Length: 196
Image (cartoon, rainbow, N blue to C red; front, side):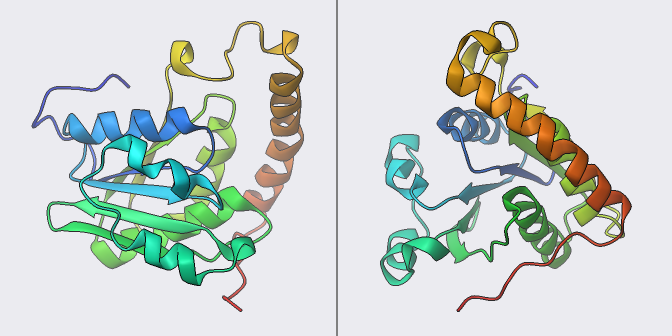
């Protein structure tokens, strides 16, 4: 998806998954271009440190949440729209992408969103698509998963096998995808543990 001109809205919200920093940069660009009025950033354990580099108008109280949350429980959603920014803690289970999909589905239900654009990496897109479609089942909301353009991605489609880290990520996705497919076919996605 290429950023489009202002006013060419194509979704109710953009949800950017935690992980590689280029995901958030690309998601902010899409939001700034008017693809959706709301931006949701999924922020994992240490990602909050890089938030200032995105040039967002406000952290929505994220710094305060980080200070009061033990590192092992640090996963947050930062929601930005015309009314401002709001950060909230996000329950996270063993399956991080499922947890993100459930968090986004909760927001979609509460806010009446009918369409989401989910931003992630190309290698992660099939698994994200499975998780979000399952989590949004019954809401009537549609989801479109968009990958960061290959030339801007830390893992490129061509030559990924030459880099040991890229190989590890891609092979990991190949192992996780069938498990997510089985979970998606088997009924409800795994729930997430309450905050302790």
